Image (cartoon, rainbow, N blue to C red; front, side, top):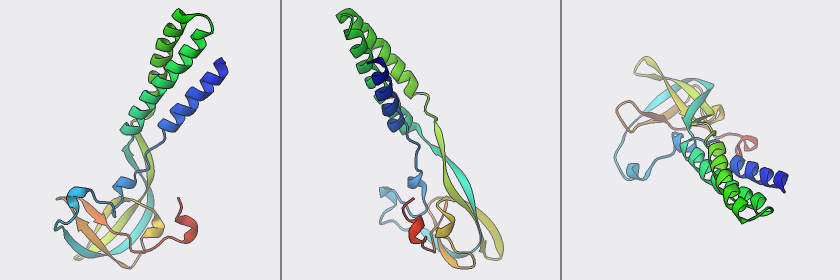
Length: 169
């Protein structure tokens, strides 16, 4: 029973503590406040594209892991304690809940996701912009649309499609 409870608790925390995918940071993802609004855009020529890692927030997954860990820990602790008596069931539930919540809180605050560092030419100067995305989405030597949503935020839109084998990542 104890081993079974530990396995259930571990699976729950692992599922809840999954790493953030970072999809919300891709250049072609906009939030509702940016829809139907005018944003400055221009075309640029992509000079280089290199793979990189982008550090993104994992706070939501960490909170979920703590909550689910606490609930599963409480259930597992109560189940183990109930094999003795009701007082131990309550104590086991409390200890298991605290332990599960603490285990869930060990999930990292950040995670690394795949990204690209794009070098681009704009009015005779070379600039770079880090984007969440994959190298196959950007073609060197081709024109791409760059959207400016804030003073220093550049969103270079993909100008290529990844092969079928890389579409389902």
